[in-house]
Structures are given as structure tokens and as C-alpha cells.
Picture 1 (cartoon, rainbow, N blue to C red):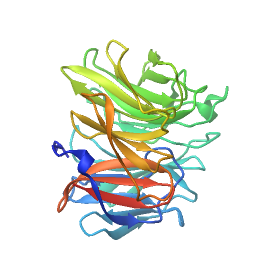
Picture 2: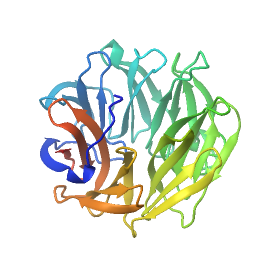
Picture 3: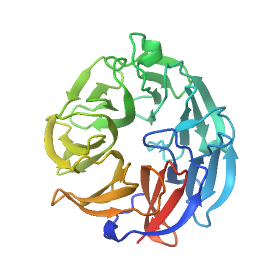
Length: 340
């Protein structure tokens, strides 16, 4: 889980398909990969577009070992989380187009811990689990692409992971379409924040206090579909992708832009950090993913010609046989495996 990627990602080559039934209903986390702390094995979670189950594959041999039943309609997001305060409790959180969120307890044989009707007015595209080290409670965070004056239908919501009960709405979120959620621990003030990658702005709110930490805007703005946080020289940075082809990197402490990378009107979706030098981003309409050199601030490779439709989601993993690897998925419903 803490492996440092060293190889050159522009050398990634297509190997094989994992499945061709993955969901297409979501902008970023439409499948998940993780190394289970319980058995130290690598797994892929694929929301099945035919029966709405979560299919679990063993990455070593690509065999489906389990199919989790619980959703009654198309799944829009699936993410894995582990409580790093004890490195024991592992969970999946998934949401669907009927605005149902399910927490799956991996530690307890993938049993459903909670099934929450969020009552949103539109799709759920992202959810979070947060395990603060300075608090006795743990939290479920849900968001929606819906906008309205009604907080219940549109605002980001916080629930308790301890008992499943609703806690509060997050201010300033009901009028913005939210596509991706990230959690951030600010080491300078010892507080937790939720980063909302939204339409035309990025909103950063305190987890429990009514504090708007910042609204990050760098014109020309558009829909922010994905992002990640990384640390360099004791500074935390947010790297985000957007529909209009810009990748923006922000210093989260001084709230200023560090750099902007222009991919010339590519429609960018899921973005990940490969290592300190490279990032990889899904290029929707070109049915590919791009390798970007952070030192040179430019695209050095465009890898594609395998997906037959839009590419939305990419994730890296260290494969027990193939080593440093990447998985990609899009509207052709195929999860494809790439390796160096």
C-alpha cells in the first residue's frame, strides 16, 4: 500500500481485459482497486451494469470471487477506505442513481453496515469515509450533483459511521454541482476539511465547524471531475482536472495557484499521481489516458487505442506478477489492465 512507483509510466502496455460489465454511470470512481489488509491480497470492485451488484475479482487470477447484492439500480461511485488509526477496519462505500448509499464492512465479511437513503434530488457522484485521529466519532460524507435551495435535496451531508445517524449539512454546498470529494487534514491547525471538486470552483469546508476555508477559482473555469492531494517540502498541494482541459495545482496552505497545465481542450476526468515526477489523467473523448511530466509541465505520452468509447477512470496498483500496473475503464464497460 505504501509502495513507491519508480518505472516510467509512458511504457505502460495493454495486457488484458478484466470484465466487460462495469457501470458507466459516474464521472470518476466507477470501479475500485485495493489491497485488503485482512489477507494482503489485491482485489478489484466492479459495479455490474446488468444486475447492480458489486462484483469482486481477485487481481492475481482475474476470477470473480464474490458478488455483493444491495443496490436496486445503477451504481455511480464505489470507493475503499481503511481506518488508519487502527489499520483494522476496512470498508467500501457505494452510491447509486436512486441516491442510496451503502457502507460495506469488509472486516465483517462484506456485510452491509448501513444503507442510507440520502433523499437527494439527483445523482450521487462521490462519497467519503473519514476517520479523524483527534475525535471519537468517524464520519460518512455524501454529496450530489443536484442544486437547489433545499439542503436536504442538494447539500453535502455528514452522517456518523458509529451509528449511521445524520449529523449536519455542510454550508455553501447546496448551490454547487459536486463531482468528487476529498478529505484533507491540515497539519498546521490540526483540523479536518472536505474538498468539493465542483462546477466552476473548488470548495473547501471544515468537517465539523461552520467554516468556509476557501473557494479556489482559476479562470477559465469548468467542471472539476477529479483530484488528489500530495505533499512536497512540508506543503500540501491539490491537483485537479477539469472538463476544459486544464490541470491546476494549488497550495492548500496559502490558497494560491502553483501551476497550470493546459492539455489543449482535452476533456479530463479521473486523475492520479504516479510518483513525484508524473501524473496520469483520463482523456474522455480521445479514449485514452495522458502521461504528464510535472517537471516539464507538459504531456509526454498519450496511451490509447484499446477502449472503444470514452475513458473515465484510471487507477494504479502493484500487481503480484506484473508489478507496477494501471487499470482503466470507460463507457465501453471494459476494465483494461496495463503493465510495464
